[in-house]
Image (tube, rainbow, N blue to C red; front, side, top):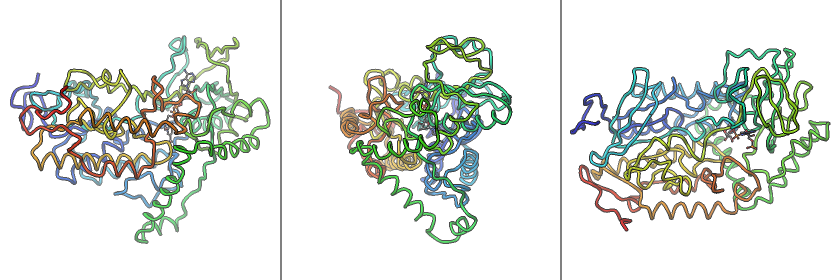
Length: 518
Ligand code: N01
């Protein structure tokens, strides 16, 4: 229970703040920095983990690297001239985020090891009441606004395979790597061949080859894997980035433009993906001699339908002597191995599940309850995830979601999207302060027309028409995850808070201007 008059400071165990930010990854940190700059300094950032970084803090599997070029994988307000390579390794990105956080002067408001257990909109107090579980037990916050930057790919999805709990060996998800597990000389089974697996499998293959171990890779669907044009930045390049004004920004702009130029192929001309497919087939032929293995790794759907993966090591790793690619469906796990549909049991000492994340039904949505007493998960259960401009949600006043529905990308850097959304949020908060608004909530009409437009644009895209099942699609078959266009268009839509699309209420009164009351 929240005491009446919860307005300033701490009251009866409830910490009252203007803004509560959930998640200390790229999204939450950007929000903290930009709110601070805008003078919105009364905020707390909560994160369930022990450090900033989000996905880059927790994904420490061998070979974890970014598949978006380093030049784009930094904040526009904190360029990094010191990236070691064209694509950055996880540890370097994590060090970068830590450094930006330390220099931002906002870390005093970060609370780690603390998970949100419930967030409920209190209509009378016009605040979000947020309960938490942390190292010192339960906590409670009352916040005017809730900024959720909990990550789109943060909740590991374990496969629903018969007997998985009976497996006697070490088992872990790619995003929860157990560095204490001794893999040397072991028989390791990896389930999944997505972006995570294609990075960790070549590393495991090498480690196991050196120690006399064996690797089974269980593939349900192959992916299109294009070359990773990787190289180290030279000392001269780094010096020039540091000393020539505007140079790094120009290089970044060129990389950005190059990636955006590909968007029409994803969105309007998927048939052109045949060019990519032909190139990949040539690579497969060059890397793999065995015709059966070649056929097994060649996808039958349009390239781009699932995320196009980049690696120079994937096909050679699968062709290595100590690796078997298993394409028969897994039927069950026993205490000592994996059984496939043909009845074969392959022994395994260690099981790595690289089976992705809960994306279209995010668990955090079950913990957020809006104005009408329904959780976000319940609201989305009917027709899938939806939000106005991917950021605000009808029925959930003063809630801002960073990396919300239809904001993810299959072609470029999420940091650009995150910064676009954070600008919009700051613009909203500035308008709220200026106009003494306690509540902003997108109208049902605004959200529906936005969602309809996104769906319309999604229809001809490769993600919707490419003939594959991907994590982009929800159980209704709708792509509620990706932005169906160029990122500068997204940014333009979010360039400034647009009160006409919102019901607003002044401080300390109930919302009274709802237009959709019918
Ligand atoms: O997960 P995924 P991920 N039995 O969902 C298979 C980002 N990312 O962690 O294709 C057997 O893509 C599943 O098979 P199928 C990036 O956006 C970025 O690899 O569904 N197999 C698939 O092969 C990426 O797209 C980076 O038939 C099962 C795999 O598991 C996203 O994260 C690195 C199964 C899951 O692939 C997710 O990538 C890593 C089952 N029951 C990730 N269930 C970088 O930029 C699932 N699979 C570095």
